[in-house]
Length: 238
Picture 1 (cartoon, one colour):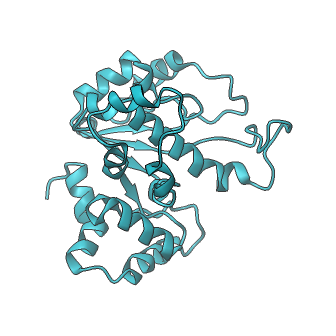
Picture 2: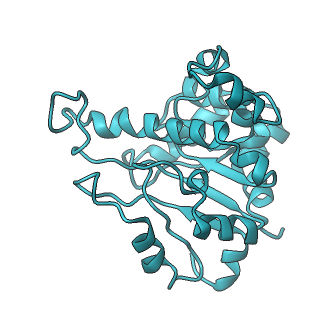
């Protein structure tokens, strides 16, 4: 992306990957990225979302931008699969850890009331909304938190309304059933075409197109996913 005009629409919420999860300095991330006008790179998902923390820099940009926030997960093999271990094995930190991390971020944003503070905020999640569409039934179950009553009382709406308000891409590496789940959960108007290219292999773009076409959606819904939703969500002129 280039050009200052983009910053009026888009806030990038991009990971900071580091082998040591303790080496995270929120203020430093802001100092580094404040020099870039067209794309703001903020924090890592290895700590709670900065908007939940009340970080003044994130609050400033959320208030300033009539824009979209992209959330992408990050972790490295330094995040072990079990507490007794020192590193992740078999690429689990990536294949399963990233979807979990995105889902945890989504849940923290929902239950902390960020969407009540910023009701116009549009958040785009990678990998078709990660675990959220597939575990919607569990998320709709009673909240397992000792402060459940206070948490729910602090929200203006049912938590599932906020979860369905996220946007999701279609980057599932050629898994039609997973894309179908995302479309059914978020709605065709909240799904944007995305492939994760160059990851996913040489056929990832064709596979993703085939995934959407296999859903046999109405023409208007397919057109929205392939391009219309992105123009609307990102405020791209026709």
